[in-house]
Image 1 (cartoon, rainbow, N blue to C red):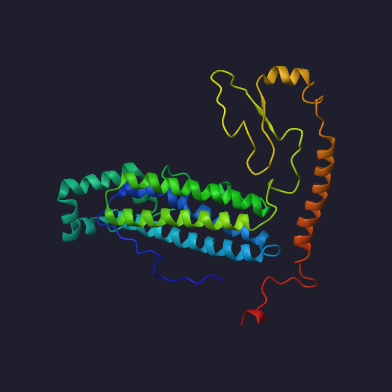
Image 2 (tube, one colour):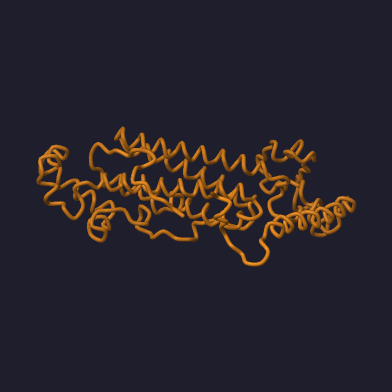
Length: 313
């Protein structure tokens, strides 16, 4: 159940119209890395988490709802940036307030032109308001959403989503000089960082959480680094020394072509790792049972009801 408060989470303000920047800001309204995409991603992920991970369900719904509030902030900012370019353009342009901001007729014509060239949908299709499209006018699409049904995978997707959104806000701040708009963008950018840490902590609380999903990695092919670009090759912690958090050493394949030929396409290895394969099969069974039990043990018997109103009073 959603309850809407007409007060914004952060008081968005704009010092003067800027339709060109309003168009750019549409990336965070109806774009791939925008607030609606984040809200819908966490909202849909929450359904699968409700029974096995009710605590994560609560977190995902809270953050999804906050993302909807951020969508409202972005939409409000876009609307204010389009002041003078909506259905009451003539009256607004003739008023003393807008004329002072635009500094006369020439400036008025410039801002109308900016609105048209930035995104014709603003004054022509929408009558001067934000729509669920990105800055190129491409409609919002559900394919932006990553919801895979495995919470450890979803949380990793969310870390990436928050990282991309943070970067978009970082870039957006370069294209406006309005101190009020910058304050709003800074707030929204900072909340991306906060959400990142929430998802990071939630992922850490699920153990084991690696590798993602249920099945273990094949130990015969986990440690190899193939040197597929032999010229000026670089060594680093991604191909030498101990693998992060696994207690195994990287195996550097200097000449992949020769290695593949000698091993008959990696089917005739010097070390078949028979013992490790048996352990992997056992872990596959354990993880399968664990994940299955997590879901089944929390599924209600008889009539299924999403909410239990009596226990919430």
